[in-house]
View 1 (cartoon, one colour):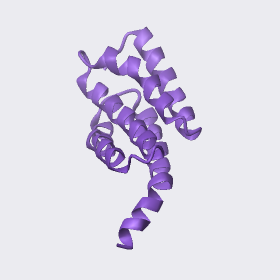
View 2: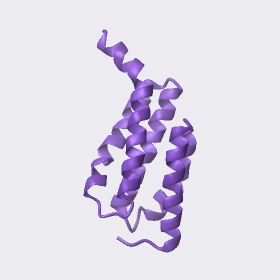
View 3: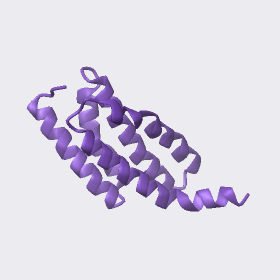
View 4: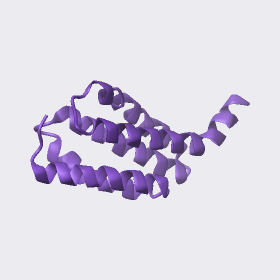
Length: 123
């Protein structure tokens, strides 16, 4: 898979920024940082765009959780989970970046959703 240099640079920068923003709990901003690349890739590289869509939805789910919109957060998180397996089968130069993004999303998910999971386990 080969992107134009502009697309490659934008995506690489977007993924780096995404990780920093998730680390800093700036989930809505993390969503926005990948939006350009997702839109640019969705026609020619649909699988790559689906991976980005999953990451964007992962960040959105975290933001929704922070806003105490638990049901919406859980629904949106399922979209992240739906597209996550594409990372393992994609022939992308960004597989490592995608994996790093996934790991930080899952770590933050555990931190934010743990109280909710504990609450439902005690019911």
